[in-house]
Length: 264
Ligand code: IPD
Image 1 (tube, rainbow, N blue to C red):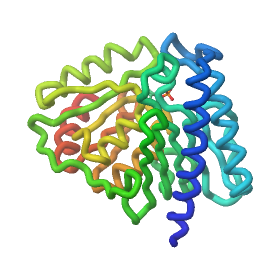
Image 2: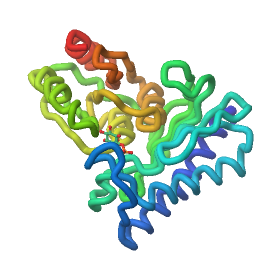
Image 3: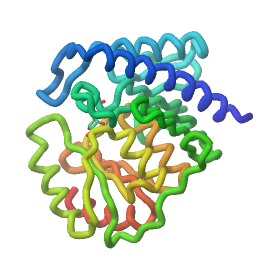
């Protein structure tokens, strides 16, 4: 077993336990704790409780590692490995009872800054679908015991997915991006959970995904899933200072990058 595989097994076990807690809390009824930067940017009591559980489990197993999560303070740690965690990615879906939400856990080495880290291990668990996606650096990506490979789609007629930023001031830009991409697309999905969009690209269920302004915890695990499934993931700083993440198989990625880089 490699060090990466051990980290992945740890992430997978914790993601399952955390996801089952989220699902139980969902069944008991969701309590909206607060609205953050805008009406769409919410946090529930379950987000906080699930993040606390993940943090405690990681501290028990690997006390020196760092932590970067959506709902609590960052900790740099001392080992050079940081856990990047979204306790419930797709919180709006979760709050409304739409099953497309997931626990997302990644272990990264280096600075806990996208582009300066090397992702080692990833687990994305969608409890309402009982689907666990995992990846270990150099060892591939998996859905349960099924090995994943990105679709070998060509750009014409690709099934794409995207997401929109929470800040209403960014909506015009996001809509312009969609307009630019639609002529090449078979159709477009906005499912509401970036980690699952990325897992679905890895699984070949989507041909590509793009979104501006994602936070590290939204994509750290999913990006490793796509890369380990043979896809290409890039994150470029745009003029609008909202980095553009593109994840897809090589041909679709090249076409999306050409279309969207012009706009950046
Ligand atoms: C959000 C979801 C959504 C994406 C947003 C993310 P959250 O994460 O992944 O699909 O469009 O950019 O912030 O807030 O539900 O954890």
